[in-house]
Image (tube, rainbow, N blue to C red; front, side):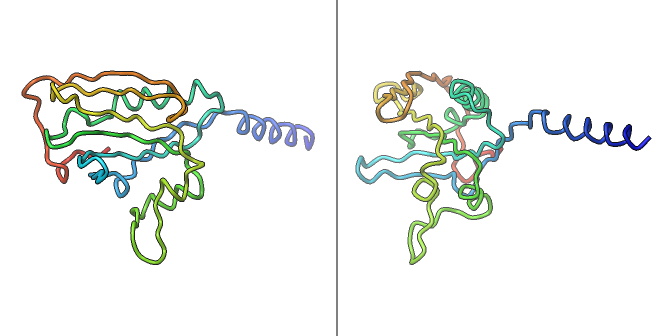
Length: 172
């Protein structure tokens, strides 16, 4: 009887260890906000997402990020005053989870900014710029040497699509 109980407990523990954990996305609303690029004189909107329980395969990680971006991006909701949009993914680590309840602090004595403090945890950033001739067209031309992946894409937003002001942007 004792051997059977040990065998059952062993099978339960082994079964728990081999089960793949569910991938979880955590939207960092305190780190996602309007962005102003003073070097170029334009403004945009950036969103930051943590991913927990990532698989280890590089191609699988990128496809997971692409699928999330394609289903959740808010690029067509931006007003015409925004020139660029980004969605940046980070692995959930002890460094990045600090920013779940805290916002980026760009000033002060103890400066804490996710893209500086947790640079090694960054996965990929989708970066789109509004086309200068057609404000409904967004273009991504990302080079591998700058972004880690070669990525080219366009998004066309329908005419008369309802735009929202940034404070009213829907959250995840």
